[in-house]
Image (cartoon, rainbow, N blue to C red; front, side):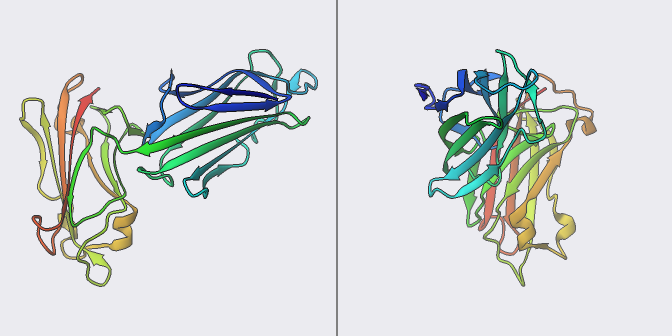
Length: 276
């Protein structure tokens, strides 16, 4: 039995008949040596030089189980075998096994979690266990102010992934996404939100201004459960013939309750982003 602990991020590993030269966490292909992860981050657990598998005809048969539990010990995320579709891998001394995970819904920011990864040999009793304790946090660059409205998550989404480095695209649709919105003065479970969007350049010049992106719902409103699930605002700089690659912009959004007025119930966000 072997046991190791990474002094930087607290990652612990232990093996029985399986060993690993290096096990670590990577974000954006760089080693990650912290315990706070931004909501929506893509995280890779890499096991490099893992050996001890029973070889059959030059092939090995690994399995990898992932379980993430919250501070109460409740299972929030579970994958029984990330290598279920890969029946076998070539047996060599440079074998690398990877768990690629997105730390987002059903995980929530502001919570503490523990990730447990079990690698096992499907042809023997060999096992290799990894534990990592972490906190999931909101993107610290998104400033959020709220009055009488509540939310669970607010994040940027661009090019098919959550933005955690505040770099957005000049040529595709960018989203600002709200999850878990509540607190509206609803009628028969129907709420009447407004959504104001302003995008400006680094000098404060307004590039895009949408007074109310939800004006079309003034009459019908939106169901409370739809608002709670997700509300999106979007913009594409390319639609306005802007080429802001390499420049900084400022995004301002206000969601408000039209039943009580923007001064009584609102949620404001401010974010400075780089355009690529």
